[in-house]
Length: 196
Image 1 (tube, rainbow, N blue to C red):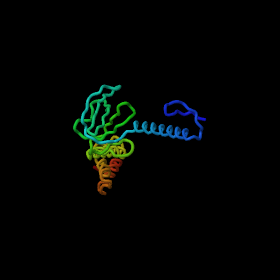
Image 2: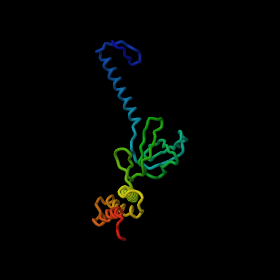
Image 3: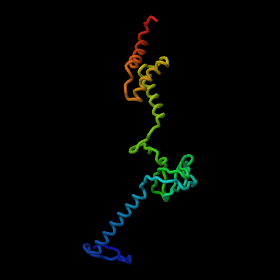
Image 4: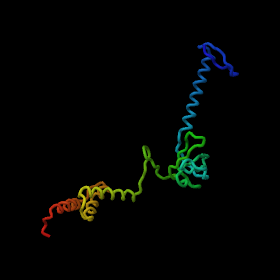
């Protein structure tokens, strides 16, 4: 026979199949589930968007500056930054809020309307067209050096890199003249027996 507590909190002995025991078991399971859900909600982080109402310094934690950030939708929490706070009063931002501390943590995601940055999963991180062009040029130059080999004149690498860059930026092979020129430059260097 199990012990349960009565309405006054006093322990009483009841039969295992009694209504009181079944009701007590139900309450224990429900309270455990509520506690588990509360813990999960408390540790869960949520992505939101709102305008910043206020930002003020709130001390330091290890090597991080702590800023208390409040939003127009009523959210408030601490933002941790190595330098200055990225949130500005009056601007609308995407942010993540949550955590297990007494005060929720607020993580800067980006300005509202800007593409979401993601470094490991869903969402996308969009590079500017200028960034894409610079990356294509760097990759093309590396491919040209790999294709021709080290120790050649710089103009040879540049000509070959232009061919690779065209492919990287358009996804199409350059016209046949460009292909022939890139290949002939390499062949002519190997055959230094030209009369001129």
